[in-house]
Image 1 (cartoon, rainbow, N blue to C red):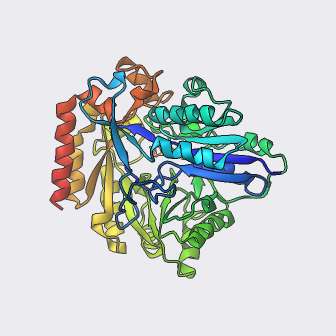
Image 2: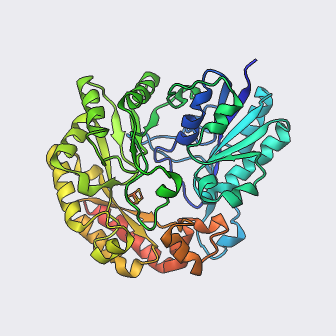
Image 3: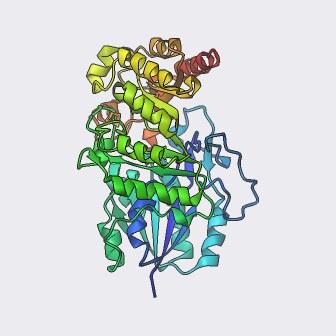
Length: 430
Ligand code: SF4
């Protein structure tokens, strides 16, 4: 008999959370090697399609498949006593998971996806329930939190911890598991409107605030086109309408990846909306790239800009300068992209905020007719900027990496509120 394995995407404990094309992509990809050799079941607390028969009505999605999670206000951990924002638990009710386990018992192993380091309370909740209702099952944790905070993750009581993309352990769970490439386990969703794809791994840059290189020790790699097309096909067969690219450097070496992929999409007249929630490198948005992206079905464009200050960028990784943004915006608009779907990300709460000229940077993007979205800074341990923040907060406690809390601790509530209202005002002016 095949081993029975439960995959769990935990609830989120945070001040804010929004379904910005969020899927447990790492877990669905890593566990795909078990597809033919194990009996797999998924419980995704964050699936807004309401698959577990909750009494909450299905939440509405916007035209590109994003939407609000079900949420409940809860008490704040003591670390956030000075943060005057509501703290919530997002996702399906705990009792729904408990009933689900009782109904589907037994399981031999439970794989739990982890994401943001400061979301670990949701992982703890899941482990507690597994220990109570599935005492014989082994608990395996994988993902970003495990990769960035391995020592803290050990305290949660799981049996095995695996870093982000290491499938060796999973393969060893079921020795006859397939060795050939397997696409992510999208079939575990009964209904799926939104999917995720990745054409590349890693990023060639080393921005001082970013943890991507800590999780991708192999550096940048283009994935084989045949695998990417297989991944796309699985999503299309499921009927998804919107696909988010989770690449960290989607536009790097496009001849090997993005261009042939989109040529395939265009030649096959495939109609699906593509989105780029991870920031695009604006300096790579040439007329050719802008053109093929628009023709291939990209609908929303999120551009990594962070600041118009050259000093800020030379200190943090030099990924962009202001004129790159002007050119990228022109190229996208000339290619036919809808200006109102082009958004620039700008960091708020970065320890070098004195160099960043945030207000001028926001006004600059707005002067180009582009939307601004503030990307709250989270101090990631073992990055240069994260380590610098040790003078403000204790990074050994992952709650202190929280992206709502840190900018408030660093800049103060008043300043943060000022930038947030300015952001709304500028976007309303477009
Ligand atoms: S370019 Fe983006 S993904 Fe790459 S290191 Fe910088 S912030 Fe991270």
